[in-house]
Length: 150
Length: 286
Image 1 (cartoon, helix red, strand yellow):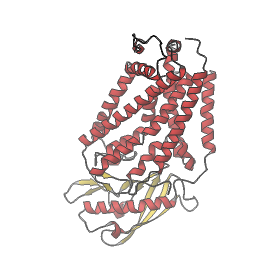
Image 2: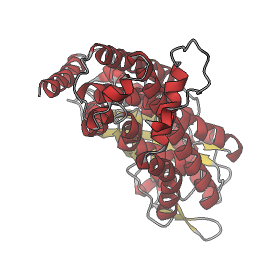
Image 3: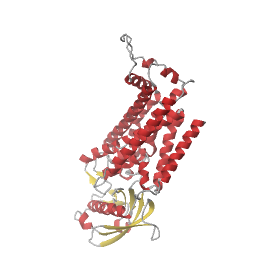
Image 4: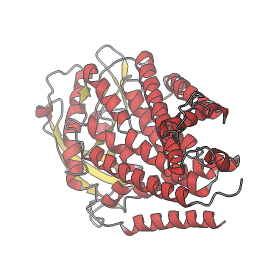
């Protein structure tokens, strides 16, 4: 039993030591990192969507995306993982019209995120491509990663 | 212990102590004779085939990274399996042999028997440790090879969707997928050392196998809370996520380097403590 107690104690100490380190250092999920990651990701995927729909003239530069991310309204600081991030993405759509899309972001502690787009602007989960096949809409919901050190 | 009788019978008149290599051969032979290790090797080869075949008929599991792409690209499937496996499968694989290799001598009451051979405790320690590490690396390599091969054969070699919305051409996707699996080596070794430590100190194979998995899940829970900020880099589960940086348009490698250093720290700390414990232990009974 002594051995077991020692082991449990050691494990408890390790957890306590780790928790006491909590709050040290910089947060890994930040507004700037999220914005820097999601802007080119959205532009690239929007180009893929356009290619599926037979609109080869759409380019990442032409989409001209820019993002403004916020976590949980004005009262919550814009750091840390959580499912309550919102990114407003401003872009030029495939008809040349400026658009503002509200993307719901689930930011995870492992420096990845899942983004869900507004179907009014980017279409449903499945698209019908130029060959008449049903294919997943790349911008409807997508995963991405950001650099937690930059 | 018949398996360890590899000392030549026509040895020179002045008998030297057998080297660690002799002990290592004995440990490898013991491990190779266990049903558990054979089942693990076969499982590492066969289970990925079953998983890939089953998932190729299912709706994409979108809650795990790369789950949504498993029908789009054969290169995405091994990454999905890796993203899922690192949650608890890889710590379990690391612990199954390493958590048992010391404690089973307690379970069978054979410590005195192996120490009556003219080998030191340090030699026994390093032989068992190297056997566990070698076996775990073999299992990881087989698992990766089987998963990647089956995925490419079943789903195909379409371009791989990256984590910046870019498409990675098929030609450069395979090295990235292999490198992603290779980043799991460092934390696997860390978990191996943790399991060895628990195996040595608790003298109980069940705790040696189960406790690293439970600790791994606790670390996952801690890190997902987000309150740790950069202190989560010190956890042994964080290096399992370092491969994400290889998949972005501008790859970043800092998490891989940090992860390797942190894993090395866990490895050295756990092995040192286990070594000291075994050296100082009073083995009189059983």
